[in-house]
Image 1 (cartoon, rainbow, N blue to C red):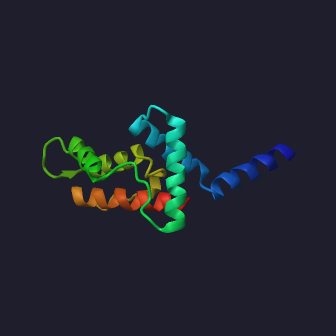
Image 2: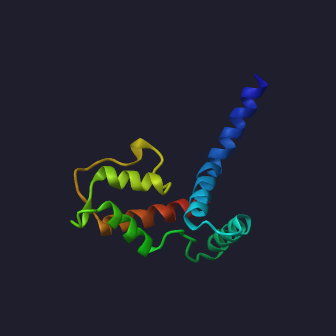
Image 3: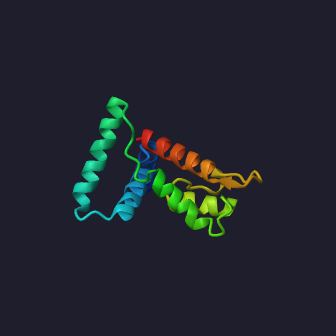
Length: 131
């Protein structure tokens, strides 16, 4: 009984402080940049996050608009300027920006580059500002 209570407390702590999301996002950044010194990179990233939180400067996104455009263009292999909702959702999941199946609803609209960039940037800002 005591073990399950401690496990519950630990789970609540992790959820309250969004530790799982933070670790997932940091891991994504590591895999995206693959720095030579991963520990130093993580320390630097967390320090930039702390500074952004205290000063209100921009949060340290690991993808800039050129990366977002490149990802979109890889999915838009026909060059139509749109991707499907399924591609959109999978891209957000891959980036760690969509964790639950109920998080996104298919409204039947096609996803344009502008919509994709807007959503990626919005979700990255939401994630970083939560820490």
